[in-house]
Image (cartoon, rainbow, N blue to C red):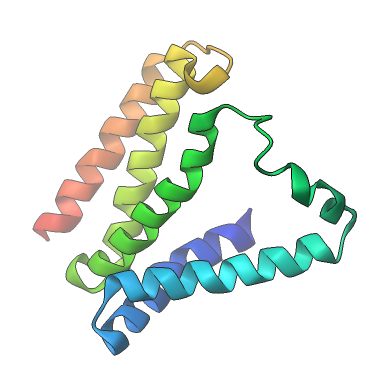
Length: 140
């Protein structure tokens, strides 16, 4: 989890540098996904998962579950674009806030097949505190 957070915190800056170098957030996102896809393909081919490769498009998952890739594209392009406009620190905090809002909605409504979980008032307070922190950082 910590390593994931570190890498997540570094990604906007790295993609922002790539976007600046080529003057294109789309190019930065393309390179990011190309490198990631090649690494994933090598990992799949090097493990027991290679036997599942032909099943990718058979239709075992609902159509909307493939939208994760589209969401990833929007995420990477937006982060590459905004990394140097608002700064990677604020960008990451706003992103975490967005993730937490999405989790509250998914949990409270049981979206996408998730188990419906009651949200406690303290969780809403936590979101409010993060939002206030974002406003304070933006004003300062």
